[in-house]
Length: 256
Image 1 (spheres, rainbow, N blue to C red):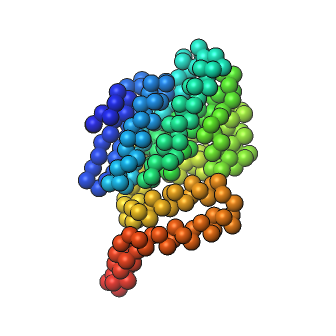
Image 2 (cartoon, rainbow, N blue to C red):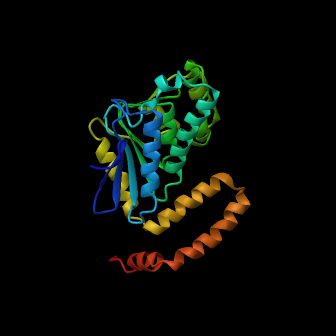
Image 3 (cartoon, rainbow, N blue to C red):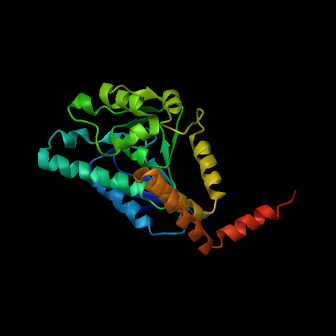
């Protein structure tokens, strides 16, 4: 593993797949301020590398991808330092959400609070069969904030309200039924399930995928008519690359 800094390690393969690991953050890969900053800096460093086709975000420990934010650090905060702390986590989530290539969350074990907010910022979420998820913030006297705002879009208002207001955890089958995760792997099959998604993405045009991800982010913010009209220009711009000619040609000329 190549260490970009003390808390962010990467493993690359020849296909353009990069595994980004949260490192040296305890057995549950907890996000204290140094870890949060380091993970964000690592992702921002990688974002300009156009050879990257897929990112798999993971924890160094198999107990979780990210277990949550550091409650020991949060217990010592005041208003000013609390806003600085949560701004760091917001910036990490945005680094994930705005990463140009698709990002897959690899989710074993526990994914709570800030960890689930980071996962929500990913494009795909693949969970182990025994994974658990929750937003426990209100039980320790704080609201769920920042990218918890993505949860109603993912699972609907009623289920998002349940997660952030009851603080009860849910298991992997429930998360799948709610749409919080995209796949639940069988026992021992998490990496195989992640690889299945990776291979599907690698079958697509890399520039088209980057354009599609950027469009999806804009569609989240824009009114419908503006989203429709914006897409016309993006469609035309796709023909500035060789992907449409090459990939459509391969389709047209395939053996029947």
